[in-house]
Image 1 (cartoon, one colour):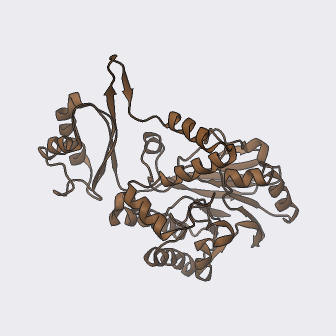
Image 2: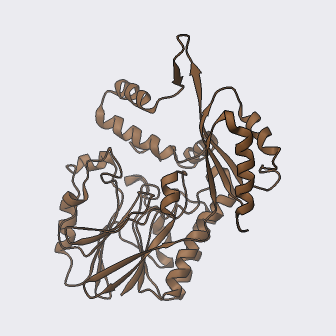
Image 3: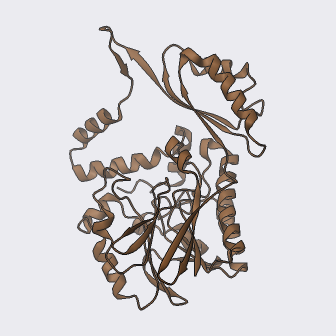
Amino acid sequence: MKFVHISDTHLGYHQYGLQERAQDFYDVFDEAVDFAIDKKVDFVIHTGDFFHSSRPSNQVILQGINILQKLKNAGIPIFVISGNHDRGSQVRDVSPLKILEPSGLRLIDNGVTEYDGIFFAGLKYISKAGLKQIGGSIKPIFEKYLENMGNGFKILMLHQEFQPFFPSSNLYLKNEIPEGFDYVGIGHYHIPQMPAVVNGATVVQPGSTEFTAYNEKEEEAGKGFYYVEVDGKEIKPQFIKLSRKRPFLYYKFSEENIEELAKQIKEDIEKLEGGKKPVVVFKGFLKELTYKDIYKYLSTEGISEEEGSILHLHFNLTREVTEDEGLTVIETSTEKINQELKRLIGDNELFESVVETLNFLRTFDNIDEIKKYLKENPDAIDI
């Protein structure tokens, strides 16, 4: 038996408001499907965030149908669960993945299904508030799943936050995964992990197929999916890196070396071998310069979106402020903001729900994207 495990494709994400980035998310998803077809796998599993939005556009739905049609034509079924991005909004709406069921997608958000002697159990994303409503543990759900599974290979599909990948989570894999499953596929965490054995099950987290928010750890780990071969009791997951992803060039920014940095970026761009134009990311601090100044320095080396050398320049910069007593402080502090927010809200459960919602909105790159999303999804803030 062999299958492909893919996760967090975020189809339809117009990162930076660019159509090119939306196409990037489709391209890597399509590459993974081409691999599955070439290997003639028995099936594909997808562990959540198939779409980036619970209300994908008509164009994005068509992209999803195209992906599924390729698998259907090859006779390869795909089993999917809903992630936090595409789960719908509880009782007010259903997951948009339901729309794709006639195209061959098999949605197993809360239950068990059997295919060719293999058992699939799925659980869609549950928020922290939702976890508290069920007692804080998802293990009883999985134990009931096992009661409905016969003799055969057992796969559990999750899109959930676990320690230590999400430090604020109270869920631990060893406590939540009961013995009895053979393979546990987990989505939501965007950095791929080495497979591990937990309570007898092979646990695999493939990460996302593209950068929804760039960071160095994701770059080091790479973007891809898992190709899994099962020979008797031996489970052999192999991480497959994607080749169609857009290059990201990451730099630590310092005003003191801006001229040297511009020259280095130019050299790095020239080393890229064709393909897609890169996204350049700056992280660091601003003191005297403005963004306009930075653009000016870069343009002297021919680095700009207008000249076509890069797709986008993304700033992740914080301005430093010097107080009268000479101490340097940062303008914003997430920790201080959260403390004040918690004090104002009062109720700890409501505070956690608000923070969870804000963290979701932080995946967007500017306020215009957030406004557009909230306008199209009036019930998105489900707290």
